[in-house]
Length: 406
Image 1: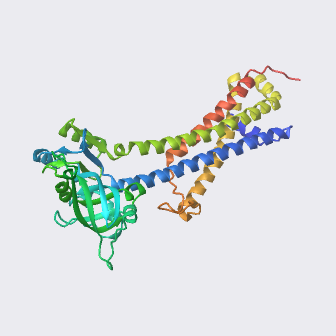
Image 2: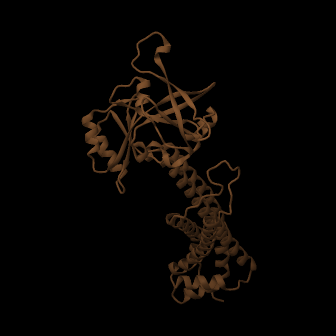
Image 3: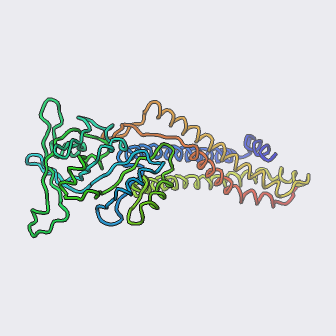
């Protein structure tokens, strides 16, 4: 009933044309704001999904590392206990440290990551090779897979035509008691086997090689590692897996899920997303002032109708609900138009990629978009809440209007 009155008032010709203009301007501003909100949230969703997919290529589902220091010891008994856990699919031991990569006269600081044969089962790096093969070699003849940025900086050659580069890896040694600083570093050679390209953070810093070679060069003990990276079985819960591993291994080990390994990145992305949403919500707040004017002028326009309704026995609450419905109707029409336009633009972008990224330095050349139902619900609820809040005071004034029949 309330919406029937509100719809008739919305369609009806007003005595003052300004009322129609203000009403349509209000609807247009709401449509613009909701369209922008859906578009921005969808683009952020697209970038978030892209970044997560890139980071999931390099980071494992769960990572075990030392609470203090760079390395930890894991006994055979604990290794067997970890292996027996039902939710673990594969695991790989890691030794990681900063190193200096020398190729001829070029020296490049890198992060060297020694991995075992299981690493290709838990990581997506082997699927991101741009040249060569993912071959770690052996302790005596180690292979090296470098990031694309490291390749450019060090002039590494991985090609079937030319001989692969033989690089020297300079690493710090542990457990050395000597006053000679040269005794605390090691030099070992590895042959370049492949190049990967994932994301600049990894491409410019990481090289991957044989774990036994790295342990030998760093003078590590048999059961000493930097990390244990774990791939969970499909459907396994990361949080539950973390809790069980933490309970099994004890407090001297740090167990992190994929999200916790990149907390800063994910929190920053989320904060940026909601900050932009809040800024765009201010446009809706501006539209609310227009709505207050539109509903207030409509109340003045319909003074006679209000008096007639009151004389027929309508309560103040009934009158207030009519004009609240008028504000809600403006919000619904505006939000509906905005969401429809945003959805159409997003679907066209998904299919045709017509809005391009500038610069050409990113992995893709178009804005990624991902539509999520909860975003539509959030935008709709925000628009309708602001519309109702804006219509509340004029509708309250209408409900208190005395009967004036002339």
